[in-house]
Length: 322
Ligand SMILES: [Mn+2]
Image 1 (tube, rainbow, N blue to C red):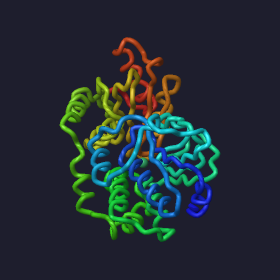
Image 2: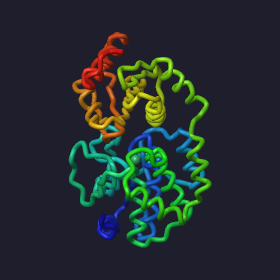
Image 3: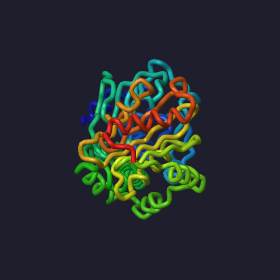
Image 4: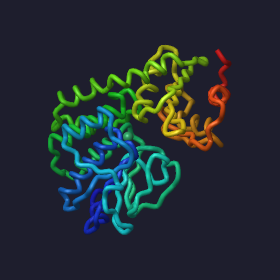
């Protein structure tokens, strides 16, 4: 991490900060945090994204912290403008290639396809907000209550309150943010993040769950947001004896997957990548990963599609059908 180099590169250019599509709290916290950081150092920026933001967790962030962010197609972005990517990388399936030059990237996901940036800070930690907090920490940049709270919320959401993928740096940066954040507000935001309509998706997953050994696989037969599919995958993982969860839901004619693994030796990212080979794409961390089958690769009829999906996962996991 070289915060001075980042500022030098961006200074004097029109800069957009782009999150991954359908940004989650960690992505928004990072964009917001980097905006404040860069602003302090004389680099004004605009935050942009693609996809909807209608999750309650995301709306609450925008309200509580007064985050200004815009769908990219509502902005005037020129090819020569600079783009800083946060919580995602160029060529990822969930990051739209917008006009502008992706010169910098700050992310905590494994790299699927290499890209040459002028500046990159890609480190595997629990939350990208941790990396952004470190920019304030290392540079001594003043941190206001809203920014500290947003970053703290990002860390808690992405690490499932320190139960997933936590590194020492996440804990160190949490401690740093603790001095400045409104902790009671963050607690409250973390503790109510399920919407009434989300229960339908939980209900569908509970009804449809199939257990193969220590793996729970469930289908949700309607469109729901990526963040909700991920939350349900976390929820299924909480079942005793389940150490791997695979949740898939309809999404814009395709199928969206969210995979979790607490199994030593089963890498969720590799599992979904191999399971969807030839059908779609997937990848991610050892503990959490996502994937997508596009509409043109769907299998008909649905009963056969489900069977193919079950078998791909169970073959890879070497479990007998329960
Ligand atoms: Mn993240």
